[in-house]
Image (cartoon, rainbow, N blue to C red; front, side):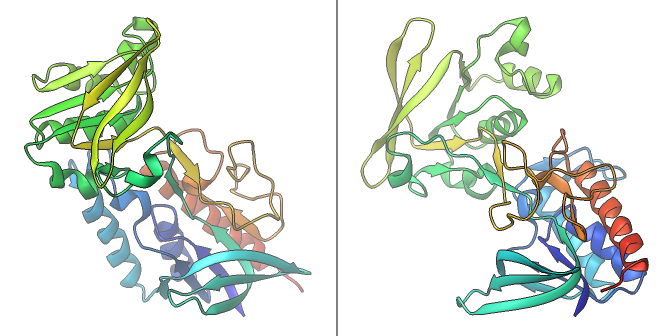
Length: 316
């Protein structure tokens, strides 16, 4: 019987684990992988105290810090369900071989993060991993000297295009928004400094009012079709690779006993408590309005301290 089980191993999970270890809780981290979206980030320039660091390197620092407290981290384990028995919780998971594992605990902290959203268009499923990627940091270097397209209008898309401008010969950026001040120059959710940098690059061409409709290719991607929503005209681009960055989806399907919003984000209060006693949630999987590494880390600490308060008053 654990005091606490932390589900996930990213920006929210590791700070929570450090605080749990310092309070000498009997706990474990279980996760399908380590690092989450942090490890898939490009250069991180907004982590206090470190001017610039690669996302993967930052995730490794989180991991190393947690291991310095001898935190038990069980990798390659995917949670598939959580059940309640009075004030206790039973977590059902599968390891990498498909073997079922069960963990019993007094409290749960869900810090499972998010995963990339797909476009859901023709050709996407067949060509995923064949020129279509949702992780520019992971796969961008494969397209050195090629022609690529980044699809999206947020910071992730901007960072993708900036990275690819140093790798690809030509970079197209497709945003569904117009180039107007009201839509922040075509990137309504983007940071001004990133937009400015992108628009100054000579090998980047931004296509506004561009709604991607189809990916072309057989064994590998060869192009894409997009609609110019101003003229209603379909246009074709020849490309060697496509980076899709159109948002994210919470990794919350495995838990049904807590309240979620329409976006499937787990709803939490200021103490990171969910609608179910003894279950807490932190980071990007929650309804926190800003998906930022530093915010997720702070939420992880809040959730851990709330779990500790709960355990201090716990009775079966």
